[in-house]
Length: 467
Ligand SMILES: Cc1ncc(COP(=O)(O)O)c(C=O)c1O
Image 1 (cartoon, protein in one colour):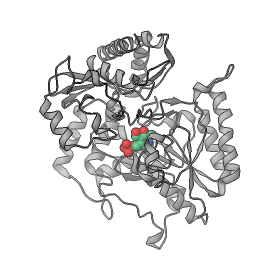
Image 2 (cartoon, rainbow, N blue to C red):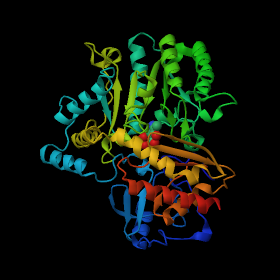
Image 3 (tube, rainbow, N blue to C red):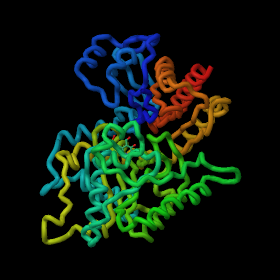
């Protein structure tokens, strides 16, 4: 079985090639077999067919700095996908390391029920201010999927408070990925992840997406959005009394294959949600924190959701953290004399002070170093340097937004993603294509030399694989 929906930015759903049996990666050096063997014996790796190892390389990483990962054998790899899209500033950014050291000297962890602390207060206030105080209440989870669970429970519960207990269904877009816990899996339209658990999940309504690649002659991405939103409108017209919320990944559906769509779609979603009394949950777990060019991807649409989920890059990839931001009106529905009307959801590590301190340090760096403005210059350079890739006759739909690049490959063989993964390692690069779509989501803080090295390696990998 070749799982095409091989995201989570790097799932080992790559079929091994028995003719290339290696332990670790040969060429730049080899990972000491002992680490690989010990890992294979003791670690059940995520999203991995364990039987494919060790034919499929398992790379043992000893250190990391900036965009570079270094193996136990000394071989290095440019982390072009930010380790499942979390390493926003690169690895071990000194400001985040220092913030964590300082926080460790003050407070490690404390539960957030009945207690509070400075990092969680400051982080909540700062994120609220960044939404113009539209989303003024921050609820904390541990990872992306837990944020989605929180948001869908909040939405359905809020409707109960309003006397609309029948509103318990959700809508997602075709090709969506919102995580793999059971609630989130119900909103994930990728069969590879869902199929074995079909009997356990409550499926959402799936509406066709606004993938800009669907443009017909004479249409632009906005026209596609306006055309495709008709499907959502038809669904809401018929079933709104049962629907609590629509959940979207704003602007780019990541794991579904870097599906780009126009911000007009989000404006239309907002208008339809208002018209049909349905919440809009924006899943900015992958696209938030500046990835698409603005801190929140939603900013590019000019409209705000009712609930917004953040995770991944918010803590710079240092510690697990997720946050659900909500509107005041929704929050107030839970205020009541009775405890049973409260939002009783809880995770042990909710609002962990270390993770919040890391997030505050990330926000400091983004702000003080004007990283998003600098990213525009970085992005222009990388796009230009990727010309040998974008102009390759087998490359289709080369696209970029903020610090995301993606392209599809025509006539790609079944083992394309495996070929790219292996070739990339030989060129000091970590790449994990999603099926026939290759993408880059590198750390932001790249110098000209890093950008040129990245582009050269990517071009060399594509040339080799497409030869
Ligand atoms: C858009 C989106 N939502 C949710 C998730 C789930 O996050 P996590 O893997 O931290 O549970 C992901 C992970 O890739 C994601 O890309």
